[in-house]
Image (cartoon, rainbow, N blue to C red):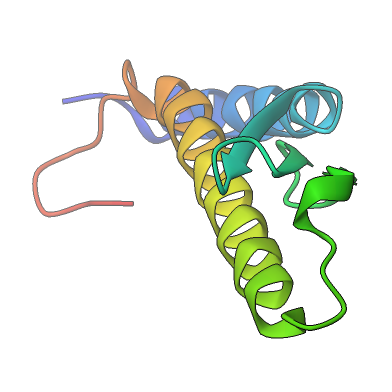
Length: 105
């Protein structure tokens, strides 16, 4: 069973690694397209949107609802992809953490 001192050192290292990884995630991007490429949304690993590109063919004044649906699908898809990327990266931090029985994160 790990000692309390060892656990404290692991926790401090994990906290520093998490801060570093969050900064790195802010610079990583994922993209998602909707409507066969009519809308492209780029999201950053910190959950912020980086850009939205709309092809002119998707802009129809008589069908604004379609563009709204494409934008919603694009934004939700990009944010979901960014969340999954972030979770995958952050899970690497706890992979080697040895917790005593009964402890969990």
